[in-house]
Amino acid sequence: MNNTFFNRIQTLAAGIGAIGVIFGAFGAHFLKSKLPVGDLETIKTGVLYLFIHTLATLLVCALSQHSPNRVLKASSLAFIIGTVMFSGSLFVIGTASLTGFPVSMIGFITPLGGLAFILGWILLIFSPKNK
Image (tube, rainbow, N blue to C red):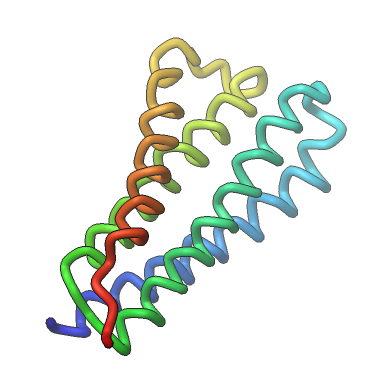
């Protein structure tokens, strides 16, 4: 399997991790005085899941160095897609009181992102191992 794919995923995951730091700091310093506690908790949840699944994606990239396969490829894609959908939608929902964005338009995206996370973890269970 071509490691170019996993190199690109690693780069993408690192970029998403940087966005997590930026958004976490933005929430902690700028938004703290502008949003209700519940909205801040929504953003915190988004940042937490972003970091967990960024690290999971990097783990999959590391595993691919020993045994690159389609299952690891699918797992990494599920984690990336889940992060964008789950955390991204929580960031939009958490800031809706400032932006006026109609949350009802994206509320369904969060659980789909959660399903992508679950799929990524299940794929790791079935990832072929070198013997």
